[in-house]
Length: 147
Image (tube, rainbow, N blue to C red; front, side, top):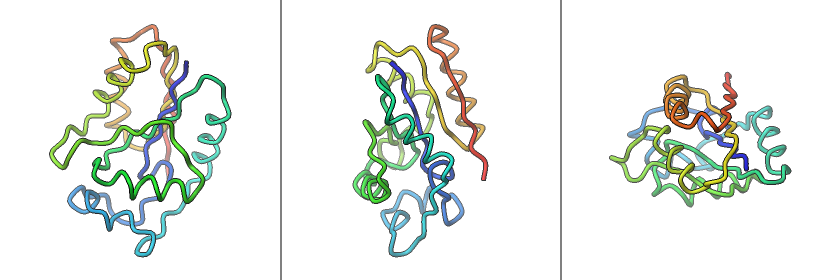
């Protein structure tokens, strides 16, 4: 099985404001009435390709907090993006390390042979790479998104 992991901010959509957790942890940060979230078409196309692949789970791996699940899911679905699973930060004081969430995915989806990851931030890419050193049997493909 393949996991296709997609970040949200500046990966699937261009975030229309400076990234700041004190604001991004609030529901209005995802308001389509207030903000224009510009889809990043190359990543959106990759998402669509992954959704069409057999034996692939498409997962949102974001540092948005779990209390924003409904707002985030609604925004994504408005653009036709339906995810198989969401891995968000648990609460405002939750762990924002994406590597730990990837490790929990590996425990949940036990027959993974590859992970393809779309992300814009080097710190998250490095964190996931470090985690994957403990799972050499799983292929990791990084797709660095730049805008």
